[in-house]
Image 1: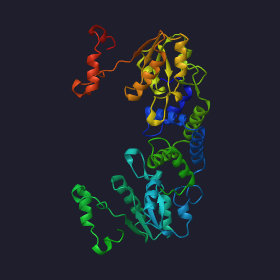
Image 2: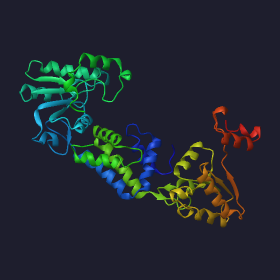
Image 3: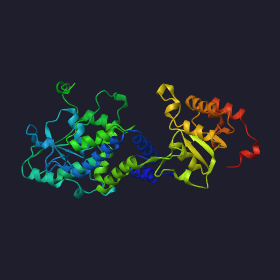
Image 4: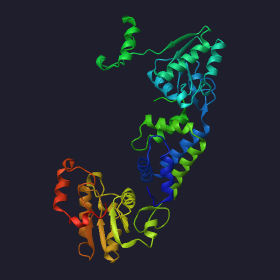
Length: 206
Length: 206
């Protein structure tokens, strides 16, 4: 695309560096900003810059946070001896939105994935193992994605802490609430049969 | 969505004010920025703010421009007596990308659309009519969208200048190059039959 304006061109180039945004979409977004009051662009820009410059990682769980310890870790009502291990902050948000979890989190920052060049050393695994060794955790709940990288990561952590007195669980895999049985994939359906649960307990949340 | 960080929340809110971007996409974009070097966020922010603060509208054609007259209007090689009338800057970019046009543009800034509350007064029509009245234009090429608002706008302009010695044309409507005849809508196919062109001239561009 040829632009008659260098300012426009620069803005489109920068916006289109964001993932999933091509030149055409970037142009649409930028032209939209031009039609809005100048304050909107200023607010957007300020929000992004101050986020990038001021954001911290929680010293306890590695979740992103405005303060040295995130709101969840700083909350005395949360059970610090139950720790849910997740990949990234989006998983924390998803679990928080259920309102069903009162423990803390441990954000790994990804999964072990040799194909992408991500080994255990790049993830926040050491600090988790350390907490277990110091006897600070009663239960670890693995809540990584149910795929080969997730399983590998779970297993890697498991091997590091298997000799310590910590209970390890994973979130239940099964048929999503509201889904039709006939459209469920075989692996999920198979697992949900093998790991069936007592009927009395199954109705609790609904 | 509940965020554990006010900074994150603010950034997501601002990004999701952009058209077609929901909270979930905004979060993905913002987290992407957090994983990139700080300079990228800074560059994005600077590009948007300086575009919004410094951009001008070309005094001749109303195209957006870094200077009082846009690169196209300032270019002496372009034919200032042929003017292509378009809705907005995206149309200018599209036509420039063809490399087939050597005249100037006139950017209306939209189409007459009473349902959206846009009347002729909100568009850059007066300046175009003025140029025609002063005898500065030999040919006006209407290149608005082929829908009822586009046709209304064309006709409104036509009525204002019909008594002046200016040639008026519209870009050809027809079957897109490479398209199958059987899948073309009836209106386009009908028009392309009625407005058929001599065979010798039709092969020029391909």
